[in-house]
Length: 465
Image (cartoon, rainbow, N blue to C red; front, side, top):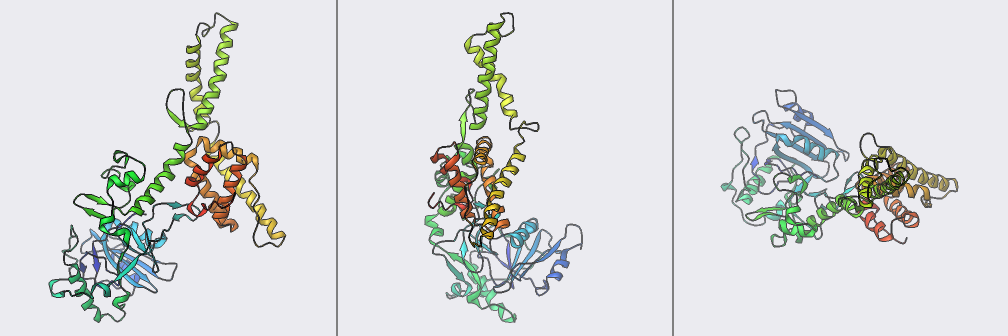
């Protein structure tokens, strides 16, 4: 999940973002999303607008601000929780639009991506659940929602604040130090709005033990939790998007909540783990998928035997005078590219992309037979038979040569089984695990470690095998 950082609150928002100034949004027709879209759409070079209906009955609308086109207005109208009005960088318009319209991560974002869906707070999306084509939603423990009423229960001085104007607005570089005064001024203006939400329904922030400043962790701690050295972490400048968004920025660097760090570590294991788990060392001393190493070793044996036979049968041949060591080295060199060509490159002998599709359809086809049989017998819940042995053997072959594709393979099986056949990912995951334990050539510990990383989170309940 990409994190969008707004730069200001619209004055008529129901859910102010802490620390940001309030800006006069009086020119926005908040009761007419089409009119918001027309404010910027096709009104000049670099201006744009967009509106869409939401699945829950609400809508979103966006427009570049014509008077200050470096920024854009973003409006989210929820049928129950009212409206969110934000000023964002214009370059972030499409990203926030995608998140609000197509994402499953709520509509209010705080602390580097913590999100609220109208009911509960969740941690920033880190781990993809391919069975549902979304980030796995992970609730925040002991989260407390902070409303405007909660904050304004303490004295504030609205006369020390002001409402900014869009024409000359420039995004501040740091949170406003007297933000509660600005919140009080925002609250004082709300009597003019007939549809304003009560202050105790205006969500501002969340509090949770994991977000306490004393419990936030450093970059070194993030690396430790992921089992890496700090130097192995993505570079904070060049590869910032590969790290989770920090929950706080301090004079000593970014700080993360420990659960976010653990989620990121899990994401890293799921991404890199299968390749590491199913790696082996070649005769050249390099690390490669164990299937490729096995192919190379087997071809090396075949070529070495041919070279030896060639030397025995004809002393005049080119390889006749080679000793054992040179024969082995020559065979290994000659065998390498044929081994690679079995599965890699545009001219691979085995089209692995076609094999992947075939494996998915084979497994799903077996599941479909089980579902059809259950219907024929009038059963509401189908019993899933083990995946056929020959299919498991082919899964073995594929996974050992393309281990980094295992999460995508199993994820798509679970996704199709859920959407096409109505089978719960957990049930499909148990079947895959059981079938591999029965017929895979991999040992049981390796199977469990692999599937803990490669099965979607929703398919992870092992139960009794």
